[in-house]
Amino acid sequence: MKKIFLLIASLVAFFNIAVNFSFLEAQTTAPVNVSWTDNSINETGFRLQRKTGTTGTWANVTPDIIANAITFVDTVPIDPLKTIVYIYRILAFNDEGVSGYSNEASITFVKKVPNNPSALGAKK
View 1 (spheres, rainbow, N blue to C red):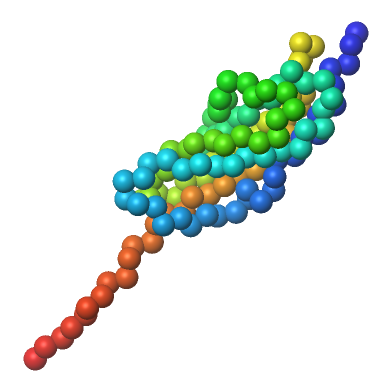
View 2: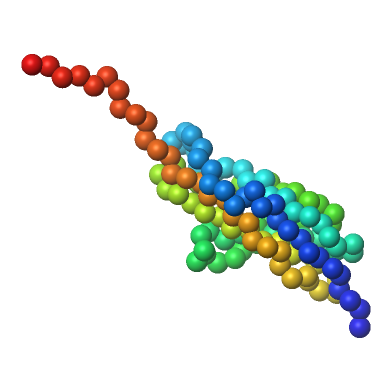
């Protein structure tokens, strides 16, 4: 019986932050730079998964990512009128099977705050 491989991947923790972007009203997508540590020596590739919010369902982000990769740019749907949280995890795989999942990392796109009113006046 062959051992699969060792993967103790950790997604970059700085994704556990809220991002307040000044999106244009028409902007509907944003890039998320996902990175991890490749601790395996014999993976065939990686499988990156994402879910929306804590109650979302995990889904593969893309077809499998090539071996030895340590970054991926994901394009996510956004809505300037809503706060959206995306959560990521990753695993490694080869012909013998799959590793366990890494830690989870999240990024939050914060609802755009309205512009300040101006030119306030009062007359008698």
